[in-house]
Image 1 (spheres, rainbow, N blue to C red):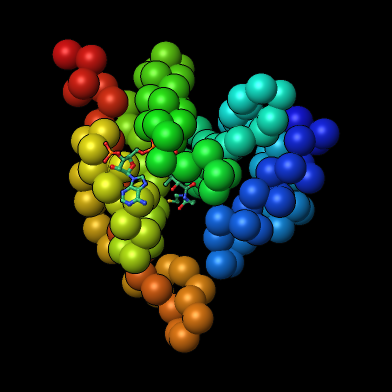
Image 2 (cartoon, rainbow, N blue to C red):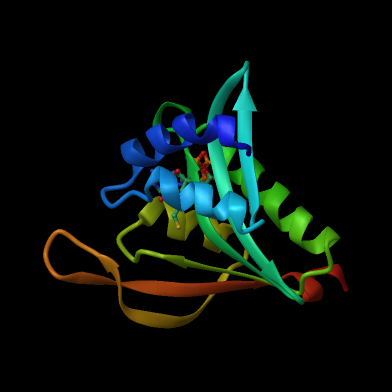
Length: 145
Ligand SMILES: CC(C)(COP(=O)(O)OP(=O)(O)OC[C@H]1O[C@@H](n2cnc3c(N)ncnc32)[C@H](O)[C@@H]1OP(=O)(O)O)[C@@H](O)C(=O)NCCC(=O)NCCS
């Protein structure tokens, strides 16, 4: 992902999340040198991921596929790429948070072997009050053995 992609990323973000990141959040991610990935099909930006990596851990901060490209296998391929990338850069664990109400996300992560490690209380904004996050992790090191 580069600065030039930010408008397209922010447009998808607004479409797929009720509480989207701002374009500034994505710009900060680029400036912070997080791993910022964009996914393309036929010249169109159709998904993105933001990964913060430190030492032997990587944390998936944001991950989305444009709505009209969803349920066509893009998310699964993209997630496999992110797992491979984390493994190739010697990370042992890939962590993420997901809303319990996000059936598509939870199911995708479970399909890839992510395990629930905990619950972060009141982590997300919600229409009324706050929503907890499921804290999930995938042991990448173990999968190599
Ligand atoms: C989660 C997301 C990235 C999945 O992307 P996708 O391209 O639709 O995923 P795929 O087509 O590759 O589907 C892979 C698996 O995800 C799960 N899945 C995807 N869409 C689903 C849905 N609507 N309901 C239930 N499970 C779903 C299934 O396990 C599916 O595997 P299956 O078809 O073999 O059952 C996409 O729905 C998205 O961008 N959502 C909005 C942003 C978001 O919630 N991101 C995750 C935040 S933690």
